[in-house]
Every structure is written in C-alpha cells, then in structure tokens.
Amino acid sequence: MAASLVVLDPLTSDRLTRFASHAPDDFTVSAAASRDRADQLEAIKSATFVVTADMAVDREMMELGHGNALKGVHKWGVGYDNIDTDAARDLGLRVLRTTGSNALPVAETAVSLMLAMQRGIVAGHMGMQAGEWAKWTVGPRCATQSGATVGLIGLGYIGKNTARLLKGFGCDVLYAKPNPLSADEEAELGVRRASIDEIITKADVVSLHCALTPETSRLIDSQAIARMKDGVLLVNTARGGIADEQAVADALISGKLRGAAFDVFDIEPIKPDNPLLAAPNAIVTPHIASMAANNYAPTVDRMMANLSALSRGEEPPELDRVV
Image (cartoon, rainbow, N blue to C red; front, top):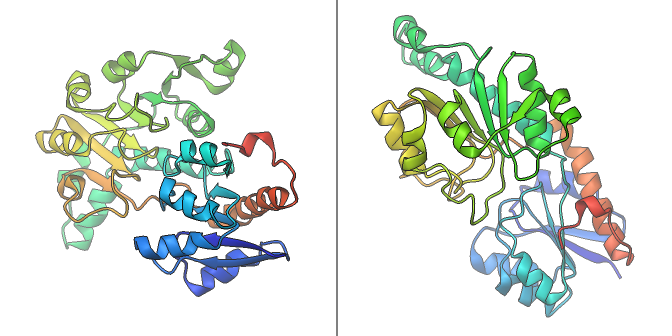
C-alpha cells in the first residue's frame, strides 16, 4: 500500500511536482490547500507522513492523524519548535529533521547581513532608488567588519559555520554555549567561550544562533540592549521570539542599536504592524536564510530517505531523529 506524504505548507503546482520527483515510487505526494486551520486538519487526516517547514503541527492535528494513518512528522529544515514533540511522544509518532543541512546557507546569510549593515548596502541602495545620492548620509555611518568583536549566542552547526566564515575577517569571535568546545576545536574555529553577559556587554555585533526555548525566549530584551555598547549590530537568523521585536525597534529609533537584521519573527508570515518594518536601520527578510537552490536536492533526498526508512520499519540515522 502506498504511503501518503503531505506537505503542510501550501505549494504551487510546479513546486509540488519538483518535490514529488524526489519521492520513492511507493509514495503519493500532495500539499495542503492553504494555511487555514480547516485545510491543515483535512491535509493531515489521511497522511502517513507530513512535512512541515513553517506550519505548526500541534496535538489536535497529531491526534487526528494518529487516529487514521499518521506515522511521523518531518521538519523541512532543522528547528522544530513548530512541532509539538510532547504530543508526538505521547502518541508514539516519530519526528525527524535533516540536522545540519541548512547550516552553511544560514551562516552565509548571517555574515551577509553583518556586512550589509556595516557597509550601508541597503540604505545606499534604497537612497539610489529614491533618486538620492546618499554618500554623505550613509557613508559616515559605515564601518568595517574586519577586526570587530562578534558574539555568537549558540554554537551548533550554524554557529560553527558562521565562525569559520568570520575567520577571514580577523574578527574576535566569542561564543556562548552550555557545553564548551574542546581546546582544539576552539583553535580551529578561532573562537573563545564567553558568558552571555560578556557577549552582551563587549560585542560590536551580536548574532543569535540558539534554539527558542523557555530559557532563550526574549533573551534580547530592553534590559539586555541597555547593557550593550552604543552602536551594536544585532543579527537574528535563529528564531523569532529570542529577541523582543518592540525593544529592538525602540533601540533602533533611539540610536542605541546601529542596526538590526532579522530573518525570523514572532509571527510568520510577518504582520504589517510589526515594529521592525518601520524602524530605521533595520533589514528584514522573509525567513530565507536556510534556502539555497543548490542545496534543495540533497536536503529533500535526505528527507525522503528518512521517511522511506520509517515506511519500511527501519530506523533513520540517529542524527536526524528528534522523537
């Protein structure tokens, strides 16, 4: 009997066809009709496996799917805070991801955002589009990335790739992580372990690379920002909710922060009243850091291999197992 694989994020017909071309021959592939709750429930009702990028998979959905044919949920990416893992454990459902698959694209995005802010790329471009020669308004605010003190909060696959990229700029890279790296790995990456407080108070650039947990929720709030040096740059390619968006917008307006670049938000898709949209010196992108056309096939093939293993009653690689 064919396994039914449903993508909960709505896809155009072309994207669905491309995705389905990577599926095993004994899989049928479809996508949810929309993001509406009713369509999400309808989609999971008959699925053997579901894939989610941004759509939440909560207990109600899992219970509905489990009552039919659902065996597992696969994250399209790495961060699984949109999946109720407690409910999955209770119901005996598997949760998988492609650990580390998007590490380099996200790291490149984080460094690109640092450079864009340091060098005034976006402000200069927007000025030109508006018919302004903004050399003497943008230029004096520019700085070099080389030699900056960069604090990485979190140092998993993405954080380590970010550190490697920063080595070329001669940055002093600090990292905060519960468990320290070995001395050899610190030397290879060119990093030094520090407390979050030291990063907050000493870094010229703070870049977030940690998971969203109760401990990291609103980690960067108005109090944390107040302890930063004046003119710090903040980058968030991790998860919305780690930084308080209103506090960041307020700090941009006051000039306490020289710039902030966010690829992730509390609510996605972003709402028109998000304070970062109107804040000066903010760069916002639509959660694209993990995406790379040349990384698509390897990631989807790995996802399909994991689900195919489950359908045969086999275990996927331990690295990709969440539940």
